Length: 95
Image (cartoon, rainbow, N blue to C red):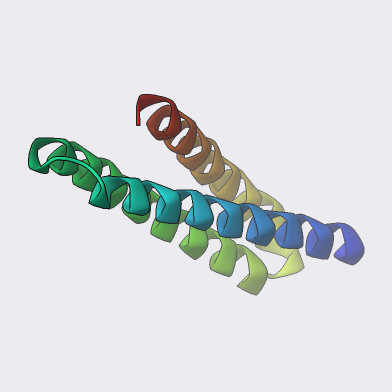
């Protein structure tokens, strides 16, 4: 169980790092846009950053969870992941 838990947490950590890189790419694209387009990018980046921070908090809580509460906390983390994943893919397609 402990090995699976650590592997799962490592997988989430790696995915968060990838999404953070995706957000950084979006920030770089925003800097090359017109003022009007930058407003749209900024709103998207702010929403992504908030959701990323929320997902990171879920991961930290998951890492700190006891073995008894880990499975129930995993569900909350997975939901945050699904939401962030959808937002990243949507923003990448849109911008």
